[in-house]
Image 1 (cartoon, rainbow, N blue to C red):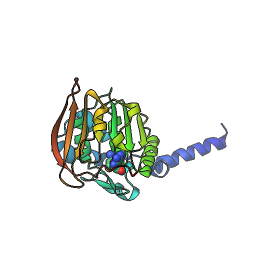
Image 2: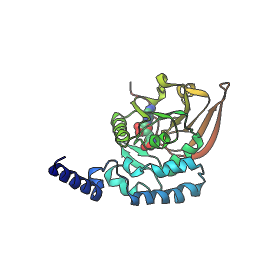
Image 3: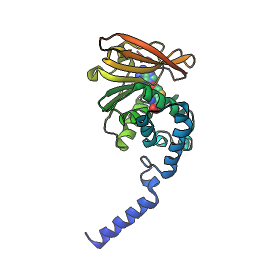
Length: 242
Ligand code: SAH
């Protein structure tokens, strides 16, 4: 290596060390953001009863501020949902943690998510499962999330643009299914794509109000049972336009 090349490398490394957010903006996590995440977990998540240590660790590891637009980064660790464009939202951190805990994912599971949005929930699940398949109906959101997740190095997430009501038959059956938009009824096609012994979590109810978080269980014989968790408010799960 010539002196000139070595000089350039030293200069570039120095620049990355001093201004990492400029060169690595899309994937840069900072100690200040890590601190905010630890506070988010203490004040919003543990305090409301989420206990699963693997879930808490995933919430600590995934940099939520990289899943929202530049102007909302300062609010990424606050206790609520945030807009992600196209009238959609990234869910409140507590709801993401609660749904993940109720889903009981494990490292051998293949998971289907309906409603990719920003890709945040998929990133959390990817830390806890073998593979995450996620479907988004708004092409721009799905493409952006796919690009973001790839840039950030998540290599066990597949994003597809399409109508989640149809599920992902080529990859079914799934150990776990999570829906992060609210249908008015439990989608039958998705229950069919659940493995015996599997479970699905989703908000169910009319647009914007009166929704409940529901856990659907399919036992080894294929019998279905449902359990109601807490009242929630999600964007609607829409039907594809003909
Ligand atoms: N899980 C997301 C938040 C999702 S918001 C995150 O972590 O950021 C709900 C998402 O569901 C929206 O992006 C919306 O476009 C999508 N959606 C609504 N109906 C859908 C359908 N039928 N199929 C797939 N995605 C759908």
